[in-house]
Image 1: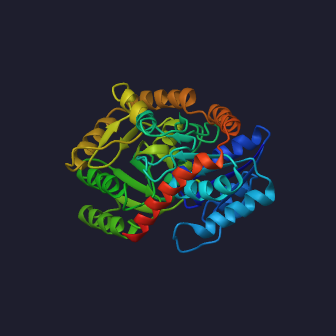
Image 2: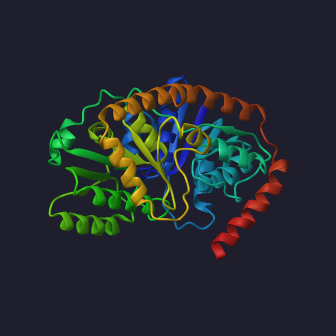
Image 3: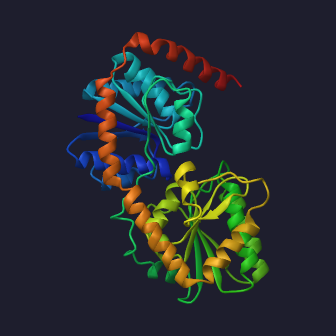
Amino acid sequence: MKVVVYPHQLAIGGSQINAIDLAAAVRDLGHEVIVYGLPGPLEGCILAKGLRYVPAHRFCYRLGVSHIIQLAALVHKENVDLVHAYEWPPCLDAFFGPGLLFGVPVVCTVLSMSVMPILPRVLPLIMGTEELADYARATHEGSVELMEPPIDTDADNPGNNGTLFRQSYGIRPDDLLVVTVSRLATDLKLDALTDAIDAVDKLASCCRLRLIMVGDGDAASQLRSRAAAVNNHHSREVVTLSGAALDPRPAYAAADVVVGMGSSALRALAHGKPVIVQGERGFNAPFDADHEPLFFRQGFYGVGDGRPGGPRLAAHIAALLADPAGRAALGARGRKVVMSRYSLRAAADKLLRIYQAAMGARLERRAMLPDAARSAWLRLCTELR
Protein backbone atom coordinates (compact mmCIF):
# COMPACT_ATOMS: atom_id res chain seq x y z
CA MET A 1 0.00 0.00 0.00
CA LYS A 2 1.23 3.51 -0.81
CA VAL A 3 -0.02 6.24 1.51
CA VAL A 4 0.32 10.02 1.69
CA VAL A 5 0.13 11.38 5.25
CA TYR A 6 -0.85 15.05 5.33
CA PRO A 7 -0.48 16.85 8.68
CA HIS A 8 -0.92 20.31 7.10
CA GLN A 9 2.00 22.13 8.72
CA LEU A 10 5.06 20.84 10.48
CA ALA A 11 5.06 23.12 13.51
CA ILE A 12 5.72 21.37 16.81
CA GLY A 13 2.40 20.04 18.11
CA GLY A 14 0.71 16.87 19.29
CA SER A 15 -1.36 16.22 16.15
CA GLN A 16 1.65 16.58 13.84
CA ILE A 17 3.92 14.43 16.02
CA ASN A 18 1.26 11.72 16.18
CA ALA A 19 0.93 11.83 12.38
CA ILE A 20 4.67 11.38 11.91
CA ASP A 21 4.99 8.63 14.54
CA LEU A 22 2.12 6.67 12.98
CA ALA A 23 3.50 7.21 9.48
CA ALA A 24 6.80 5.65 10.55
CA ALA A 25 5.01 2.78 12.31
CA VAL A 26 2.94 2.01 9.19
CA ARG A 27 6.12 2.13 7.10
CA ASP A 28 7.76 -0.32 9.50
CA LEU A 29 4.86 -2.71 8.86
CA GLY A 30 5.91 -2.91 5.22
CA HIS A 31 4.12 -0.05 3.45
CA GLU A 32 5.36 2.97 1.52
CA VAL A 33 4.56 6.29 3.19
CA ILE A 34 5.07 9.86 1.97
CA VAL A 35 4.62 12.82 4.33
CA TYR A 36 3.28 15.99 2.70
CA GLY A 37 2.85 19.30 4.51
CA LEU A 38 3.94 22.89 4.99
CA PRO A 39 7.61 23.17 5.99
CA GLY A 40 8.39 23.60 9.68
CA PRO A 41 10.58 22.44 12.58
CA LEU A 42 9.33 18.83 12.39
CA GLU A 43 10.95 18.27 8.97
CA GLY A 44 14.01 17.01 10.85
CA CYS A 45 11.89 14.51 12.75
CA ILE A 46 10.51 13.15 9.47
CA LEU A 47 13.96 12.72 7.99
CA ALA A 48 15.34 11.21 11.22
CA LYS A 49 12.69 8.49 10.98
CA GLY A 50 13.71 7.76 7.39
CA LEU A 51 10.42 8.92 5.91
CA ARG A 52 10.13 10.61 2.54
CA TYR A 53 8.98 14.22 2.78
CA VAL A 54 7.37 16.33 0.04
CA PRO A 55 6.98 19.99 1.08
CA ALA A 56 3.78 21.85 0.34
CA HIS A 57 4.17 25.33 -1.14
CA ARG A 58 2.97 28.18 1.05
CA PHE A 59 0.00 30.24 -0.04
CA CYS A 60 -2.57 32.70 1.26
CA TYR A 61 -5.31 30.34 2.44
CA ARG A 62 -8.41 30.86 0.29
CA LEU A 63 -10.28 27.57 0.00
CA GLY A 64 -6.92 25.81 -0.32
CA VAL A 65 -7.05 25.69 -4.14
CA SER A 66 -3.27 25.58 -4.57
CA HIS A 67 -2.91 22.78 -2.01
CA ILE A 68 -5.77 20.86 -3.60
CA ILE A 69 -3.93 21.02 -6.93
CA GLN A 70 -0.53 20.20 -5.41
CA LEU A 71 -1.84 17.23 -3.45
CA ALA A 72 -3.83 15.87 -6.39
CA ALA A 73 -0.76 16.10 -8.63
CA LEU A 74 1.40 14.30 -6.07
CA VAL A 75 -1.13 11.50 -5.59
CA HIS A 76 -1.57 11.06 -9.35
CA LYS A 77 2.17 11.11 -10.09
CA GLU A 78 3.04 8.67 -7.30
CA ASN A 79 0.05 6.36 -7.92
CA VAL A 80 -0.95 6.66 -4.26
CA ASP A 81 -3.54 4.26 -2.83
CA LEU A 82 -4.84 6.39 0.06
CA VAL A 83 -4.47 9.83 1.68
CA HIS A 84 -4.56 10.21 5.46
CA ALA A 85 -5.19 13.85 6.40
CA TYR A 86 -5.03 15.35 9.89
CA GLU A 87 -7.45 18.11 11.03
CA TRP A 88 -10.04 19.84 8.89
CA PRO A 89 -8.04 22.00 6.38
CA PRO A 90 -5.99 19.04 5.06
CA CYS A 91 -9.14 16.88 5.09
CA LEU A 92 -10.84 19.38 2.77
CA ASP A 93 -7.79 19.56 0.50
CA ALA A 94 -7.65 15.77 0.22
CA PHE A 95 -11.41 15.43 -0.29
CA PHE A 96 -11.65 18.03 -3.06
CA GLY A 97 -8.34 17.00 -4.65
CA PRO A 98 -7.43 13.31 -4.95
CA GLY A 99 -10.73 12.17 -3.46
CA LEU A 100 -13.15 13.97 -5.76
CA LEU A 101 -10.90 14.13 -8.83
CA PHE A 102 -9.45 10.61 -8.84
CA GLY A 103 -11.57 8.61 -6.41
CA VAL A 104 -8.60 7.98 -4.09
CA PRO A 105 -9.79 6.99 -0.59
CA VAL A 106 -9.30 9.66 2.08
CA VAL A 107 -9.17 9.04 5.83
CA CYS A 108 -9.45 12.02 8.16
CA THR A 109 -8.13 12.25 11.73
CA VAL A 110 -9.38 14.96 14.11
CA LEU A 111 -7.40 15.34 17.34
CA SER A 112 -8.71 18.81 18.19
CA MET A 113 -11.43 19.02 20.84
CA SER A 114 -14.37 19.68 18.50
CA VAL A 115 -15.96 18.25 15.35
CA MET A 116 -16.09 20.95 12.68
CA PRO A 117 -19.38 20.96 10.73
CA ILE A 118 -17.37 21.76 7.60
CA LEU A 119 -15.91 18.25 7.45
CA PRO A 120 -17.31 16.09 4.63
CA ARG A 121 -19.72 13.69 6.29
CA VAL A 122 -19.01 10.77 3.98
CA LEU A 123 -15.31 10.48 4.82
CA PRO A 124 -14.02 7.81 7.22
CA LEU A 125 -13.25 9.71 10.41
CA ILE A 126 -10.84 8.98 13.27
CA MET A 127 -11.47 10.81 16.54
CA GLY A 128 -9.13 11.12 19.50
CA THR A 129 -11.61 10.64 22.39
CA GLU A 130 -14.63 8.44 23.11
CA GLU A 131 -16.79 11.50 23.77
CA LEU A 132 -15.99 13.13 20.43
CA ALA A 133 -16.37 9.84 18.56
CA ASP A 134 -19.89 9.44 19.97
CA TYR A 135 -20.68 13.05 19.07
CA ALA A 136 -19.44 12.57 15.50
CA ARG A 137 -21.43 9.36 15.01
CA ALA A 138 -24.66 11.30 15.61
CA THR A 139 -24.24 13.30 12.37
CA HIS A 140 -21.51 11.58 10.35
CA GLU A 141 -22.44 9.24 7.48
CA GLY A 142 -19.03 7.60 7.06
CA SER A 143 -17.39 5.29 9.58
CA VAL A 144 -16.16 6.84 12.82
CA GLU A 145 -13.33 5.13 14.69
CA LEU A 146 -11.71 5.91 18.02
CA MET A 147 -7.93 6.16 18.12
CA GLU A 148 -6.47 7.84 21.17
CA PRO A 149 -3.13 9.62 20.69
CA PRO A 150 -0.48 6.88 20.37
CA ILE A 151 2.75 7.10 22.32
CA ASP A 152 6.13 5.64 21.38
CA THR A 153 6.74 3.94 24.71
CA ASP A 154 10.20 2.81 23.59
CA ALA A 155 11.39 6.40 23.14
CA ASP A 156 9.33 7.85 26.00
CA ASN A 157 10.30 5.76 28.99
CA PRO A 158 11.43 6.13 32.63
CA GLY A 159 15.03 5.33 31.66
CA ASN A 160 15.57 8.74 30.07
CA ASN A 161 17.94 10.90 32.12
CA GLY A 162 17.07 14.46 33.11
CA THR A 163 20.21 15.29 35.08
CA LEU A 164 21.82 17.43 32.38
CA PHE A 165 18.56 19.27 31.81
CA ARG A 166 18.34 20.18 35.49
CA GLN A 167 21.98 21.22 35.60
CA SER A 168 21.65 23.42 32.52
CA TYR A 169 18.98 25.50 34.28
CA GLY A 170 20.72 25.58 37.66
CA ILE A 171 18.20 23.28 39.32
CA ARG A 172 19.70 21.60 42.38
CA PRO A 173 19.04 17.93 43.16
CA ASP A 174 16.79 18.91 46.09
CA ASP A 175 14.84 21.54 44.12
CA LEU A 176 11.30 20.57 43.14
CA LEU A 177 10.69 20.91 39.41
CA VAL A 178 7.35 21.31 37.64
CA VAL A 179 7.47 21.01 33.83
CA THR A 180 4.98 21.80 31.10
CA VAL A 181 5.62 20.97 27.43
CA SER A 182 3.17 22.82 25.23
CA ARG A 183 2.63 25.16 22.34
CA LEU A 184 2.54 28.63 23.88
CA ALA A 185 -0.65 29.41 22.00
CA THR A 186 -3.31 31.97 22.77
CA ASP A 187 -6.01 29.62 21.52
CA LEU A 188 -6.86 26.75 23.93
CA LYS A 189 -3.56 26.96 25.84
CA LEU A 190 -3.11 30.42 27.35
CA ASP A 191 -5.44 30.04 30.34
CA ALA A 192 -3.82 26.76 31.38
CA LEU A 193 -0.30 28.12 31.00
CA THR A 194 -1.19 31.21 33.00
CA ASP A 195 -2.70 29.01 35.72
CA ALA A 196 0.59 27.08 35.91
CA ILE A 197 2.58 30.28 36.46
CA ASP A 198 0.09 31.53 39.07
CA ALA A 199 0.16 28.20 40.92
CA VAL A 200 3.94 28.16 41.19
CA ASP A 201 3.93 31.82 42.24
CA LYS A 202 1.64 30.88 45.12
CA LEU A 203 3.90 28.02 46.25
CA ALA A 204 7.38 29.43 45.60
CA SER A 205 7.67 31.21 48.95
CA CYS A 206 7.18 27.91 50.80
CA CYS A 207 9.78 25.72 49.06
CA ARG A 208 12.55 25.60 46.44
CA LEU A 209 10.20 25.24 43.51
CA ARG A 210 10.80 25.87 39.80
CA LEU A 211 8.55 25.82 36.74
CA ILE A 212 10.03 25.29 33.27
CA MET A 213 7.78 25.83 30.27
CA VAL A 214 9.05 24.09 27.12
CA GLY A 215 7.55 25.43 23.90
CA ASP A 216 6.98 28.49 21.78
CA GLY A 217 4.06 30.28 20.14
CA ASP A 218 2.11 33.48 19.81
CA ALA A 219 1.55 33.79 23.58
CA ALA A 220 5.26 33.58 24.44
CA SER A 221 5.79 37.30 25.01
CA GLN A 222 2.71 37.57 27.24
CA LEU A 223 3.81 34.57 29.31
CA ARG A 224 7.37 35.84 29.47
CA SER A 225 6.16 39.11 30.98
CA ARG A 226 4.10 37.27 33.58
CA ALA A 227 7.07 35.01 34.41
CA ALA A 228 9.34 38.04 34.83
CA ALA A 229 6.90 39.57 37.31
CA VAL A 230 6.86 36.37 39.37
CA ASN A 231 10.65 36.12 39.31
CA ASN A 232 10.98 39.75 40.42
CA HIS A 233 8.48 39.16 43.21
CA HIS A 234 10.53 36.27 44.62
CA SER A 235 13.94 37.80 43.79
CA ARG A 236 15.00 34.57 42.09
CA GLU A 237 14.32 32.46 39.00
CA VAL A 238 11.03 30.68 39.63
CA VAL A 239 9.54 30.46 36.13
CA THR A 240 11.66 29.79 33.03
CA LEU A 241 10.51 29.76 29.42
CA SER A 242 13.06 27.52 27.73
CA GLY A 243 11.77 27.76 24.14
CA ALA A 244 10.72 25.01 21.77
CA ALA A 245 12.44 21.62 21.78
CA LEU A 246 12.27 19.00 19.05
CA ASP A 247 13.16 16.41 21.69
CA PRO A 248 11.48 17.26 25.02
CA ARG A 249 12.34 13.92 26.63
CA PRO A 250 15.06 15.40 28.90
CA ALA A 251 12.48 17.87 30.25
CA TYR A 252 9.99 15.12 31.04
CA ALA A 253 12.75 13.04 32.62
CA ALA A 254 13.90 15.95 34.80
CA ALA A 255 10.45 16.75 36.21
CA ASP A 256 9.08 15.91 39.62
CA VAL A 257 5.57 16.79 38.40
CA VAL A 258 4.26 17.50 34.89
CA VAL A 259 1.25 19.68 34.11
CA GLY A 260 -0.30 19.69 30.65
CA MET A 261 -2.88 18.21 28.33
CA GLY A 262 -3.32 15.85 25.40
CA SER A 263 -0.33 14.02 23.99
CA SER A 264 2.04 15.91 26.27
CA ALA A 265 0.31 14.51 29.35
CA LEU A 266 0.48 11.01 27.89
CA ARG A 267 4.20 11.33 27.09
CA ALA A 268 4.82 12.41 30.68
CA LEU A 269 2.94 9.34 31.94
CA ALA A 270 5.07 7.18 29.65
CA HIS A 271 8.11 8.61 31.46
CA GLY A 272 6.60 7.45 34.74
CA LYS A 273 5.84 10.97 35.97
CA PRO A 274 2.81 12.10 37.98
CA VAL A 275 0.64 14.34 35.82
CA ILE A 276 -1.92 17.05 36.49
CA VAL A 277 -4.14 17.38 33.43
CA GLN A 278 -5.21 20.86 32.38
CA GLY A 279 -7.82 22.23 30.01
CA GLU A 280 -9.83 25.39 29.46
CA ARG A 281 -11.73 27.68 31.81
CA GLY A 282 -9.66 26.75 34.84
CA PHE A 283 -9.88 22.96 34.56
CA ASN A 284 -7.18 20.84 36.20
CA ALA A 285 -7.15 17.46 37.92
CA PRO A 286 -4.50 14.80 38.66
CA PHE A 287 -4.37 11.62 36.65
CA ASP A 288 -5.22 9.12 39.37
CA ALA A 289 -7.66 6.28 39.99
CA ASP A 290 -10.51 8.70 40.72
CA HIS A 291 -10.09 10.63 37.46
CA GLU A 292 -9.10 7.82 35.07
CA PRO A 293 -12.68 7.18 33.83
CA LEU A 294 -13.12 10.89 33.10
CA PHE A 295 -9.93 11.14 31.04
CA PHE A 296 -10.56 7.87 29.23
CA ARG A 297 -13.93 9.27 28.19
CA GLN A 298 -13.12 12.86 27.25
CA GLY A 299 -9.38 12.69 26.61
CA PHE A 300 -6.58 14.28 28.61
CA TYR A 301 -8.29 17.65 28.72
CA GLY A 302 -11.29 19.26 30.35
CA VAL A 303 -13.45 22.36 30.57
CA GLY A 304 -13.84 24.03 33.95
CA ASP A 305 -16.38 26.37 35.49
CA GLY A 306 -14.63 29.56 34.44
CA ARG A 307 -13.06 30.34 37.79
CA PRO A 308 -9.26 30.84 37.85
CA GLY A 309 -7.56 27.47 37.95
CA GLY A 310 -4.36 28.62 39.65
CA PRO A 311 -5.45 28.05 43.27
CA ARG A 312 -6.73 24.51 42.53
CA LEU A 313 -3.62 23.71 40.55
CA ALA A 314 -1.43 24.98 43.39
CA ALA A 315 -3.23 22.63 45.79
CA HIS A 316 -2.72 19.65 43.47
CA ILE A 317 0.97 20.46 42.98
CA ALA A 318 1.54 20.97 46.72
CA ALA A 319 -0.08 17.62 47.54
CA LEU A 320 2.14 15.79 45.06
CA LEU A 321 5.35 17.56 46.03
CA ALA A 322 4.73 16.71 49.69
CA ASP A 323 4.36 12.99 48.95
CA PRO A 324 7.37 11.43 47.13
CA ALA A 325 5.99 7.91 47.57
CA GLY A 326 2.64 9.00 46.15
CA ARG A 327 4.39 10.59 43.16
CA ALA A 328 6.25 7.37 42.48
CA ALA A 329 3.07 5.29 42.71
CA LEU A 330 1.16 7.59 40.36
CA GLY A 331 4.06 7.58 37.91
CA ALA A 332 4.24 3.78 37.87
CA ARG A 333 0.47 3.54 37.40
CA GLY A 334 0.58 6.06 34.54
CA ARG A 335 3.33 4.17 32.75
CA LYS A 336 1.32 0.96 33.02
CA VAL A 337 -1.79 2.65 31.59
CA VAL A 338 0.10 4.08 28.62
CA MET A 339 1.75 0.73 27.88
CA SER A 340 -1.59 -1.10 27.88
CA ARG A 341 -3.85 1.50 26.21
CA TYR A 342 -1.78 3.92 24.11
CA SER A 343 0.84 1.73 22.41
CA LEU A 344 2.09 3.04 19.07
CA ARG A 345 2.37 -0.46 17.58
CA ALA A 346 -1.23 -1.34 18.49
CA ALA A 347 -2.38 1.97 16.99
CA ALA A 348 -0.50 1.25 13.75
CA ASP A 349 -2.14 -2.18 13.46
CA LYS A 350 -5.57 -0.61 13.94
CA LEU A 351 -4.78 2.16 11.46
CA LEU A 352 -3.94 -0.37 8.77
CA ARG A 353 -7.32 -2.01 9.30
CA ILE A 354 -8.98 1.40 8.90
CA TYR A 355 -7.02 1.99 5.68
CA GLN A 356 -8.03 -1.39 4.29
CA ALA A 357 -11.69 -0.77 5.14
CA ALA A 358 -11.58 2.63 3.42
CA MET A 359 -10.09 1.10 0.30
CA GLY A 360 -12.70 -1.64 0.34
CA ALA A 361 -15.53 0.90 0.61
CA ARG A 362 -14.23 3.34 -2.01
CA LEU A 363 -16.69 6.20 -2.54
CA GLU A 364 -18.19 6.95 -5.94
CA ARG A 365 -18.04 10.55 -7.16
CA ARG A 366 -21.82 10.93 -7.24
CA ALA A 367 -21.98 9.99 -3.56
CA MET A 368 -19.42 12.70 -2.78
CA LEU A 369 -20.96 15.59 -4.73
CA PRO A 370 -23.69 16.64 -2.23
CA ASP A 371 -21.10 16.74 0.56
CA ALA A 372 -18.68 18.60 -1.69
CA ALA A 373 -21.27 21.33 -2.33
CA ARG A 374 -22.12 21.59 1.36
CA SER A 375 -18.49 21.77 2.56
CA ALA A 376 -17.51 24.26 -0.16
CA TRP A 377 -20.40 26.53 0.83
CA LEU A 378 -19.53 26.39 4.54
CA ARG A 379 -15.86 27.09 3.76
CA LEU A 380 -16.77 30.06 1.58
CA CYS A 381 -19.02 31.46 4.30
CA THR A 382 -16.12 31.14 6.77
CA GLU A 383 -13.79 33.03 4.42
CA LEU A 384 -16.31 35.83 3.86
CA ARG A 385 -16.89 36.55 7.56
